[in-house]
Image (cartoon, rainbow, N blue to C red):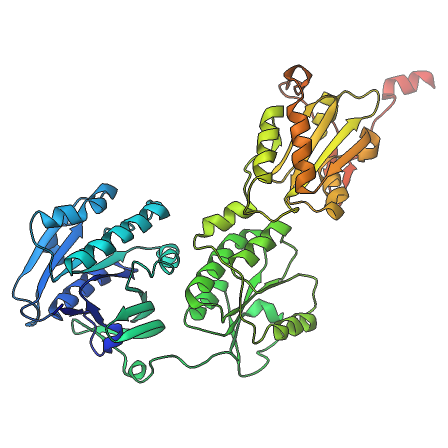
Length: 520
């Protein structure tokens, strides 16, 4: 009969503790000390006849394994491995050189952030290989991985239930620890989305008493967790509302919810990346029952940013010009909803969707065509909403090279090129109705004064067809920008006030004092 091993947490029920032979289990920890302590208490939780081996990555196992209690197996086999990616791939072969893994509990203690630079596909292949190996040799592999930023890895592993029998994380919170179990499968059944509070005292891990009575947390569908800035100074609207001073405090509280409403406040553009990662973590780890809302307090969102937040798992993004009464109505309208859109495992996929092109400004004709073609061929981007291709022909008397000097795009992803007596612009993720506004930001003068003809393409098929025509232009017809002069003064003494370019008047004196006195 295959043995059943246990996690070293006291008072934990069997559904969340047992690890039968023939599977792989994974636990993330925030701190290295917690990982070491959990390993030692897991060893002590085994029977005296149990066969246990500990493999430490980049550390001396004699400094990791410290037998303090009276329980545990009679002997523990200790191994060390280099802190390298190849060491992980050769782990099964190296173990079999020393022991027969049959009916063994093998604990792999990873180095800090050991998986941060390993590609996702290689991690999946490694899990598949270790799963087959554990089933073939009827052994249990427990991976304990400490790291400072395990949320991304945890979200990726959520979908690897084919190869992982259990996935959990141990997060340190001041004087207690939060044990977050994504799923745990053993002979007692399958448990998922469990959150328990653990206490680490007297050299032991145990579940807090109030947590022992509740296997599944109660429904929190009526709770509304909000940033205090969302209500614009108003007090909590009912006993169900809870206000937080920052998005970080709100995020930490939301990690223990199941169906509550979470409202983030967005006050400036540099918060978008952090909020997007928090939303992605909540949606991937807490499920589809959460209602996640982003309230824009000041104008700071572009269309690409809004698409990023929605793609990460937000139910709704409320614009800055919506009054508070309208905001509360919109929040009420999403109550009872279940999030149904697909959220990719890796947030970098979403970032590549909204920021696929890192170019800006002038590009050579062929480079321009390649960049726009790659945008059109990117299947992750929304159809017919990737941007606008604009061809501008200057008025008689202005060379195309001179017109180029007036073209000053500020956004990453806005590129231009010149050739065939045309200035061709590609404005990424720009809508047709916003084209005139975008051109007013790019050119310091009205485009009607600079260009006599304008053509635009905004559908994918139209842009792709025009790129094919542009590729047919011979290199002899490509143009180059004017050479830059050192200490060159700006062409126009103008500033942009947020709506249009305005010239700054400068006083000019036609006659000096001597000439004026002589003439009189």
